[in-house]
Length: 117
Image 1 (cartoon, rainbow, N blue to C red):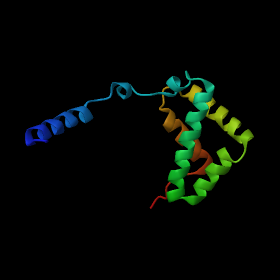
Image 2: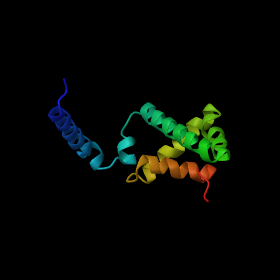
Image 3: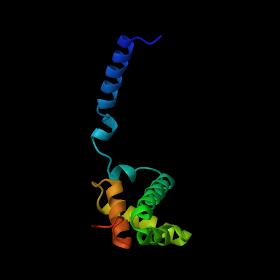
Image 4: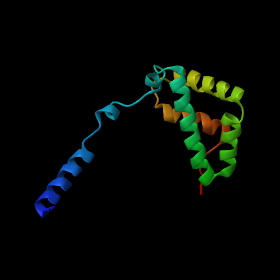
C-alpha cells in the first residue's frame, strides 16, 4: 500500500530529478559537433530535422510545406545537393546550433514556416 509519506517522497525525488540540469545539453550542441559524425548519421539528422520542419509548416503554411517537400524530398539528386549545402553551411558557421542552421536554410528556400499575423 502506498502511504502519504511515500507519495510525498516520490514527488520530491521526481521534482529534483526533472529539475536537475542535463550536463549533455549545458555546453551546447554545435554544427561542429554534428560534423564529427559519420556522413550517414548527418544525413539522417538533416532528413529528420527537415521532415519535422515540414510537419510544422503543414500545420501553419501549407505552401511552405509543399516547398520543403519539393526542395528536399522530391528527388534523390536534390536530397544529395541539399545535404551538401547544409554541410557546407555548417562548416562555414560551426559555432551555431545545427537546428538553427537548418531552419535558416529552409527559410531562405521556402520562407517562414508559420504565418505572421
